[in-house]
Structures are given as structure tokens and as C-alpha cells.
Amino acid sequence: MKKRWIVVIVIIAILFLAPLVVAIIFPWTGINCKHQDINIKTGQIRYTRSLWFMTISERVEETILSKAMEGHIVDVADIKPWHRVNTFSPYLNNSPHYIFHSALSQINQIKQSGVCT
Image (cartoon, rainbow, N blue to C red):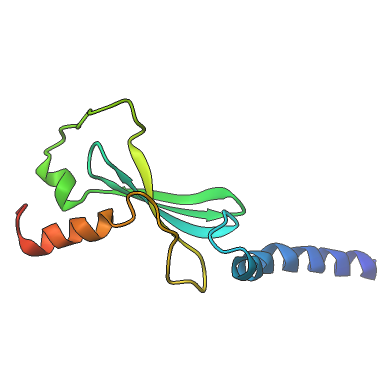
């Protein structure tokens, strides 16, 4: 009976501690990370949180760009609308570079300049 409890405690410890430890060795994996995506057709931003390769939370926010577009969709080509901007992992305050890596920064610069108010 004691051995079963020890096995259960070890398994629970592995499940809860592994995402924190593995993130040091393999950063930016789906084990424990946050993603930021931009919809290049509407200007919206999507924030996604993953744990054990499963999405545990997701929210879509309007930006100054999407508000300026007033709901219009830019349909320039047959490409997917959502593109990865940043991926953050615990203990790291940087992200690998993606094609649209600077998109959120550029939207904030537009907002601060007052061009789209």
C-alpha cells in the first residue's frame, strides 16, 4: 500500500514539475509556453497558452489597426490569416524570430504616434 502512494506521488510530481524543468532544456516547446499571433487580414492579436502541447487558454484582442479597419478583411492572397509573432517560455524573456516578429511592436508604435486615432 505504501509503495502505491509513493508511485502516485512521484507521478504527480513529474507531471507538475516537468513543464518547469523541461522548459530550461528545451525552450519554446509546447510543453510550457505562450504564443502571440497576428491575423494579417484583420489586424487582431491572439494570445495562446500551452501546457503539455494542449491549448489551455486563448484570447483574441482588437488592436488599433483592427479598429481602424472597421471590420473590413484584407483578402490579398490565399494565405492563412494567423501568423506566429512571438513564443515565450518560462525563464526566457526572448523569442525566436518569425517572419512577423516585429508586428506587435509596429502596431504599438502606430498607437503611440497617434496616426490611427
